[in-house]
Length: 193
Image 1 (cartoon, rainbow, N blue to C red):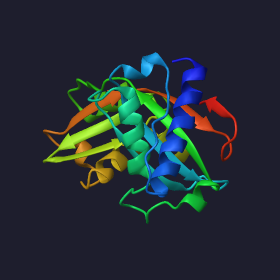
Image 2 (tube, rainbow, N blue to C red):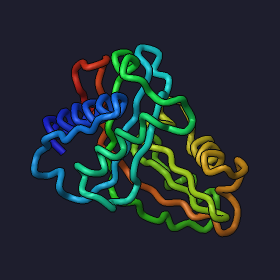
Image 3 (cartoon, rainbow, N blue to C red):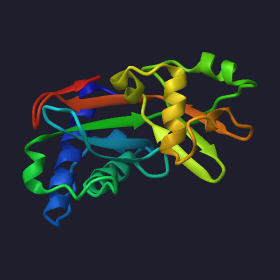
């Protein structure tokens, strides 16, 4: 995706979220490529601390990117881990959009083999096990300085499982990558990460 498209995506996510905080809806105009079905996540962070304020998205390409982006931005305002975002807070938050590749199953025989297949900074992961599912975006382990094993432990806990669930028989791990576009400051320059 071109930087201009990433800028358009971040600006649209902000407009949708700001409208949502006011009980309105936004219908941003986006380039033609946004009609293709893609997975996407919208992340809202407090500025300048970088503390997470909301992060919601669609890992599978179930909707046209435009629709998935709008729904993710609106839903991120109501992330159940936090109180609802207010319009006034948007002035103190940055918006980030991660456009995902289609998740693919990682074939592996042992936990050690799985660890050897994960590239920190490139890979996002999804665990499916015992009826639960958890996802962490590619940028998360880099932001926290995790290695592959720490990444898998946190992924397991994100799914509501024990930290070692990724090693258990029957655990399924999918991998995806993402193009990440983010504001450098509230309403500021948008860069590719």
